Amino acid sequence: RPRALSGIQPTAGSFHLGNYLGAVRQYVALQESHDAFYMVVDLHAITVPQDPKELRANTRVAAAQLLAAGLDPERCTLFVQSHVPEHAQLAWVMNCLTGFGEASRMTQFKDKSAKQGADRTTVGLFTYPILQVADILLYQANAVPVGEDQRQHIELTRDIAERFNGRFGQTFTLPSAHIVRETAKIYDLQDPTAKMSKSSATPKGLINLLDDPKVSAKKIKSAVTDTDTVIRFDAENKPGVSNLLTIYATLTGTTVAELEQRYEGKGYGALKTDLADVVVEWVTPFRARTQEYLDDPETLDAVLAKGAEKARAVAAETLAQTYDRMGFLPAK
Ligand code: AQP
Image 1: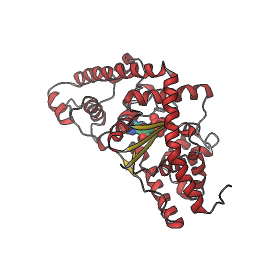
Image 2: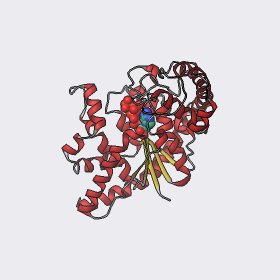
Image 3: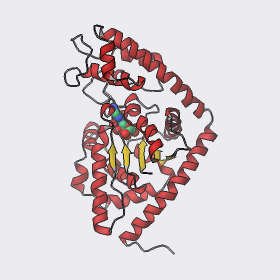
Image 4: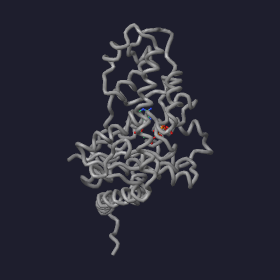
């Protein structure tokens, strides 16, 4: 079976709808066809300041949400990044193979560091994509399910893997981004030209899966649309309505075309009210399942321990081979 690998940050506590539709849904799908490794990326999280107590709690919350979304530890390997020390070890090697200019061209870093200012931007944030390179290459992953915002980082991973293979002999599999076009970028409800993100300009544009469903329903109902009245998918001219149609179609397993037909002659109010109901119906059992996993931390930790053990077996082999190829003297 081909390998899949992806990771999600535990930072915000709750995942948002963009994380779920853009990435986590694909994790669930790929566990059927791939030998899949999924991790809660706590090492990535500390590239911005974290409260230690919250980070620890949120790591469990993230794992619980992944299980609630449908990851099955019998069918995939679910673990916490810091439980597998090879990630940090291979990241150092990859840092030494990456050009400073090359890393400087990463748009996510440019955007985030511009927002934070140079003094608050850590070197860790700068090398974040290179840790991601190590994450992916350690598992010889073929497919990396992610949202559109990660495409450039997967390209970087391919470049560095090719560079290593060229210099030291075939070692790493070249991965491909697994990006589902329709849901590759879910937009902010208040600014439908910007990505829905945990650092959105206003919380009103962001649907957190673990929020009170009433709050989420209200946000859907006050989503920004346009002054036209027709319910039609047109990402360029009607980004707000198009985003709502994408969310609606994906959560209900219908198509956008079907929805356009169903809402012909109806107003935006009807679409929003119905979508608010759809979201409430989806998040309510999701929250309950997440809580069940959190109520039993021993079982949750056991799942993560078993996952880390399985992940380590693969990661250690890749790291040993990498060290050997580079000419490190083996420890006796
Ligand atoms: N709006 C989105 N649409 C589609 N996919 C998205 N992803 C994030 N936002 C969207 C995908 O979710 C996965 C996990 O992301 P992460 O843990 O790296 O979080 P993030 O990308 O940092 O999430 P945010 O909310 O966008 O955070 P900030 O504001 O810090 O940038 C990834 O596969 C990502 O593509």
